[in-house]
Image 1 (cartoon, rainbow, N blue to C red):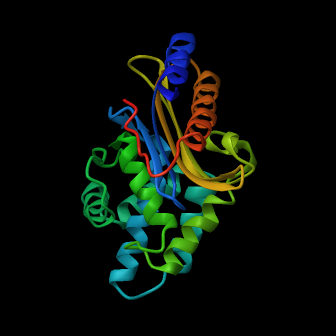
Image 2: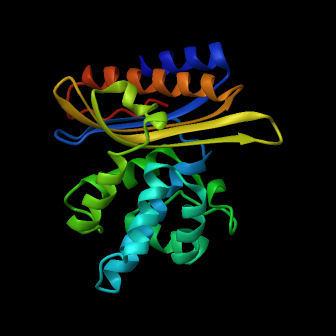
Length: 241
């Protein structure tokens, strides 16, 4: 059912999507697509997780500058802030080190300093969401609370993507026009509440002819993923494609 609806998106718009969705209460999950995608600004959550892991290792909280820079990076998706924190974590090597701790096995950091060209899969980003929101995580409660707070205060003009699947959300989006093809990579991930349940949801996409078309495709995929998972009895965990 999900595969059919996502194929319809590709036929209509040319956008190719990968989806990962989890209902953490009972463990139901679905995965569609194993291809690698460019993260664009989606990696900013990963950068912040790496910064927090480093601070935990040093047995300290974030400095005032780190916290305010992280807030700008997540809430406003500010690239200068991401540049500064990318350097702070040690660039691509620092991200790779953190990802080993976080359990991300298929994510490759972008070439320094191009953090937006980090490559990942929907399954890996679902693992990152689990680290951000689950109690059993390398991130301590204070670190998780900080990321969750920032993801719940996204600037109003960036309230799109997985938020289309629920009434309450915490999210981060990413978008990038690929210069060689003039096509867009549009991504969204987060925690949404819908139909009395909570879902962790990742939508990665590439090949959209405009940003608006890509957002439409991501939101259609998000709504379809939640609908399909609600119709799947636990503990079935389908690998849809």
